[in-house]
Length: 351
Ligand code: NAP
Image (cartoon, rainbow, N blue to C red; front, side, top):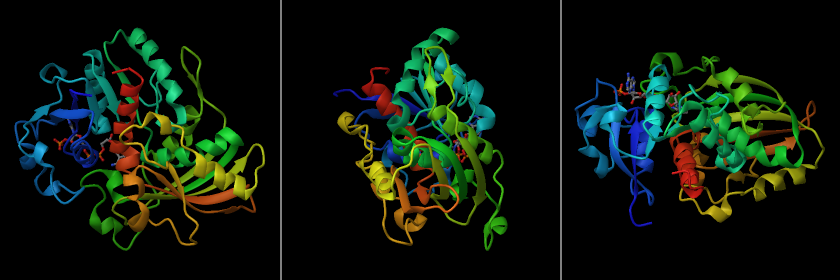
C-alpha cells in the first residue's frame, strides 16, 4: 500500500484514546490526521491536553505531541475512519454524525452495539456479520457506517469460547470477572475506594456480559441480527490491578468433548491467519499449562496484548469444564480490537 488511509481518533485524550495513539504509531495502513475530544481539550496540543494523564506507555508518540485537538465535529475533520473512544454519555450523536458524513466509525462505546443492523464485531468470531454494513447504510441513508467492539469483559472470553461454540456448542456459562482499574476510564475509581479492597459492582457490566455474546454468536439473516441461545450468568468485580481483566468461567457444552479436545480446539483456532492483518495475534488463544497462570501483570502483554490467555482448563463437577481467561482490556478489549476491526474492513474492501 503506497498511501496510508487517513484516520481520526474521537476521545483521543482518554484511557482508550491514549491506547489508540500508541497503537496507531507507525501503523502500516493507517495515518492519524486528526484528534478529537471535548471542548475542554480543543485547541490544545495533544501533549498539553493529556499532560500528566498520559498513562499507557513511557511517553507520548512523537507524531501526536504537537497535533492540535479539535472538537468532534465531522465538518471539521477529514478522513475515512473515525476510531471512537468517547464517553458513552456523548458518543451516540457524534458517531452517527460521522457515519452520516461518510466515515467508517469503529466504536468502543456501548451505544450502538445492540442495534439490529450494527455489527458487534470480533474478527476471528463473526467476520461474516459485516454483511450487515450494506443494509445499515441503506436503512439509515448514510454514506458511512458504524461497526462496534464488544465490551472489554465480553471480548476476551467470547474469543476463547469461539472454537468450543463451533465444535461442541455451548449451553450455559457462569462467569466471574476481576476487572482492572483502567477499565473504568480516567481518573476512574477513587484510590481510597480500591486500595486494600475489591468492589463487587460495576454499573451495567453484568448485563452487557450476559447479552453481547448472544449477538456475537448469533446470525445475520440478511435484514437483522438474531441472537443465539446460551444461558449466561455473570458477576463482575473491580480489583486493584492497572490493566488486564481476569475471568473465571464454568461452561456446559452441548456435545461432549474430552478435556484434550477442548484444549486443542482453543490452541488450533486461528481463522484469520491467511489475511495477515497487521494487528492479528499470531495465536489468538494462548493456552497456558502452569497451575498459577495466567496472571495480569505477567501475561497481559502476550501477543502484544491482542490474545486471549487461557489457563487452568479442567473438568467442572457442576457443569462440564472450568478455566481462567485473561485479556488486556484497553488493547484486545478496546483500542487494539478496534484497529483490528478496521483492518478487517480494509481487507474486505469496505474502506
Ligand atoms: P475516558 O478515559 O473517560 O475518556 C473519555 C474521552 O471522551 C476523553 O477523550 C474525553 O475528552 C472525551 N469526551 C468526554 N466528553 C466529551 C464531549 N462532550 N465531546 C467530545 N469528547 C468528549 O474513557 P475510556 O475509558 O477511554 O472509555 C472510552 C469509551 O470506551 C467509553 O465509551 C467506554 O465505555 C469504552 N470502553 C472502555 C474500555 C476501557 O478499558 N477503559 C474498554 C472498552 C470500552 P476530554 O479529555 O476532553 O474530556
